[in-house]
Length: 157
Image (cartoon, rainbow, N blue to C red; front, side, top):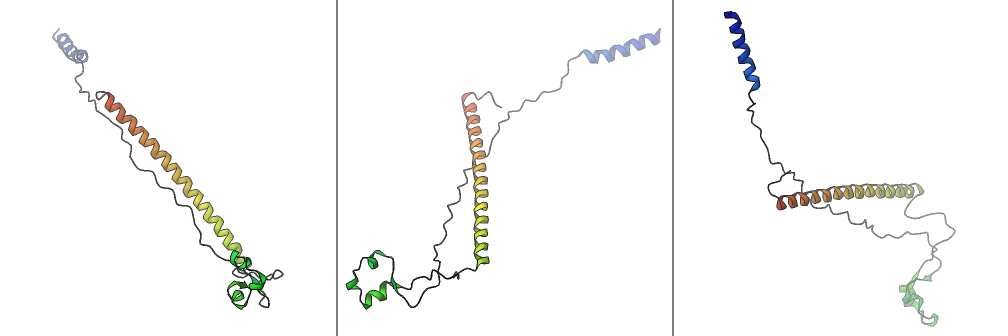
């Protein structure tokens, strides 16, 4: 009988722990999401190449007036020696297969390099546009968060 009472006491103590409410503290935190407020990346300025002249083989036995308005508007009777010194040039040879400045291989390499530069610039522009879209989204989310905080300071995300 003494043993039964002891079992009953032990069982009572064990079950009494199950019936009491838990006293584990609950912690509520105030979490506010903040997105980086970064300015847009300025796009690259358009690529401006330096002007250059293609030079062709020229006929050194002939002289023609330069194609400027001053030189072309001068009448034939006023074309003296000083006119030809300042307004004449040797005409290009139209039947020559020599292209001055580039060999064919160099010119093709020049064209390939220009195409590579163009493709790279398009890649940079696409990356900058994507970054600016993401930053605009962050700024919008920041503005929404700030608006929520200003409208109801007790309700935080």
